[in-house]
Length: 318
Image: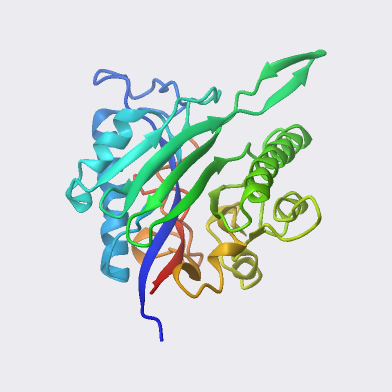
């Protein structure tokens, strides 16, 4: 009979984690991000708040996630400032590339160096046709990290995405579809070489799990399932990671390859959740359970993020 050890993999859209431009900005001046009065003080409040999210998670679940995909990260500084917090105990490193996103925010991955080893990383950029010419997309790249799980000695292929928003309607819907199409091809090519590759896709899809674009992503070229999305069931049960005009949405998701299910040994999927701890809820909205966000439009609230983190639980079977 096999024994098992539980570990966690998380994704978190941290809502506009920009470094401040300087200490002497007028309270009426907008930061380059569009944030009003984004000062050093407010920035460090935000960093401390995010560190508390991980402290709460550790209290609730026993230990921190072994890796966390992040969205809306501006640069290396914000990652370094976050990982300097005591909760991470100098055990975490990060992977980040600057993208061509028009808002200047990117995806990133932080991971526990005592549990995971980074073997390789790169980004994939989707191009779009404009006026009969190819141009570089000005949205976030697909971040790819090849990791070695030191205990199980298994390679993990991790993709972190943040798809274009629901703004601009059909234009961004086409972009989301094309980026997911690129991702599907990348994954399918990898599985054609080795069907047992362990693949994790995490991110803010800006679509719910039952959207046709996402349903297409999990189907391979022969309509075989190449990814499983446990967040389909969570969404059906009314679990949400973010809200728009009080409407619940589950844009933040983690998808896994079939090789992470029903294993006799090594890493195996166990469960998935939205981490909507009471600490992260905006208590000014009675009975609505909305995330305590940093800004509401231009109004500073001083919260954590407008998204809840999501995570999956995996077991190491021996």
